[in-house]
Length: 480
Image (tube, rainbow, N blue to C red; front, side, top):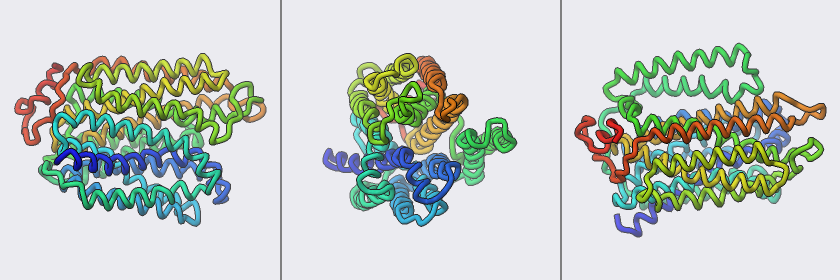
């Protein structure tokens, strides 16, 4: 591919992945509006978020693997079409049930992340792979921030349905452009989809994420939550057994055990817990009436504007990380990004009485997100065989989402567990929550220190049957 083709391919990939990332957070500030418009309960409307989370968690690694097997371009186009249909159905949804179904369809778009990283690895020159992955990671991270910032103005000026109407046209154009200009990847994995493994993966993810996301309404000690968590552990063990025995595993456990992969995934779990919790609860903190003794009584739009420094910082640091990685290495960037996250949460725990303090802490966290997102993706991509890029990066995104679900659920328990007489959360819940998130991000930084210090940035050979035949895998397996 020439440079023009590379830029066009990147623009298409960034558009699709950026819109999906934005849809993750775009609807969250508008949930009270959706609840009122559709005459439903608060517990029911939360399924608009839960359904999206569960769907994305299931489809991301499975379709990442399908792309490795049948071709990343055709899978990408199919996923973009599904995202268009999901947005269209959501925009037209006459009731909450249809809207929840539409969010399930939208969740298929989670596969855009691993497919996009795989296409970049297959099609771009070796010298452009790391910077392009960093830039795409910056777009993905900024997409989540854009969702928080834009939700208020869109709902205020138009209607909550426009949160879905606007992406329809953009993603449809991206699908047509992908069909026309993105070449089919030459690198294919051998074998077939392990459907038993896919089913067990889906089952344990749902059994794990469902009780975590609903624990605040069901109760952590409820029978439903405990039974589902037990089922998740059991199904996870069965999945490991199935994948270990399969001739064509959905997720190659041998690759998952590589030092660079398991340490990066563990860091993703811990950092994701802090990141998603901050995204979910910082706007709510700003919207709390000052009569509660804290908060600023901000509108949805005002709370979104306080998050603007995070958006700018995460995009800037994500792009910059692509230039810094050849100099300092992805490991150093991951450690630094996690440390920024810990510092930001510590600032929020100690100083949150002024709006500028919230904006400053958000900006610091944004620096951490940009560095961490880009370095995680690069570490995974350059540590696995090319034919397994989709499945491996999809699993990394999933682990980050699992961490986010856990972080948000624990933060919710702390915030809602101590209410004032007015019914508003006590300030101590937020203080304790932000302190815990600081410790989680600090844990992520400590785990990131164990990532092997390998600075190899060339893509792995596509067809090595064993670790010793694969220079990057061999180096990572020995920790060098």
